[in-house]
Image (cartoon, rainbow, N blue to C red; front, side, top):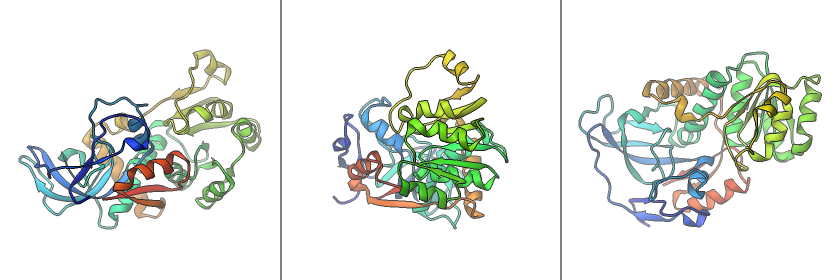
Length: 326
């Protein structure tokens, strides 16, 4: 297929519903810019949108993260010009495309040191790590944190970020190879035990106390293990549904687990304003710039092969971040 094209989600379902369509290059309106995507980030939330787990009005664009070059600027846009290198990670949906128009206040300028692929691999996951660690859980040096799916694109950033601020990290991964990757990233304890024994392992590593914070992007499959791993009055942050949504629970379940707290946050609420978005990205770029967080791209796919990329991430066949290249 020749440029330009975009993926328009016209029905929900398996990866086979991802079909690219020819488009005319859009023109930016007031307050908008036209971006030619050079790299597109693949995130697990994309599979939730595609499958219908997260409901969308159809037809819809797909993908909320990308990096590219400004090709045209609409009226009333300040601070951006043609040729600027930019990235975006808070939507609106539509990054699975060669070209798109987007509101200027949804864009951040990329430092010269950050390439397009690294930006597309890092921004959504990295800014999620920023808010989870620094503004949601407010993790402090000296604490111990359990990180699920620690070798994935999200988990690998969490592990590095936590270690950089002085945290003891207990990492859990799906197999021994992935656990070894988590250990290479700096995890103090890298586990690959079954979920039904994980809480006992965590308790054993913490003198029976459990951890004050659990960062859980897995969801249904890890819920019981996470509940069993949280220390008294600790915090369970369930931020993703990689295995499906968490099962129904009651306030009494939280009492039984030790008067714990549970939150289900989303990036959209922590990067709600342009200032919050810009500050989160600046913090991420700072962490990357000083070498505290290294972005590992485990796989790249042609954007036209987006369906194959979705199959790979849903099969847990990827490590690190996955990037789609138009």
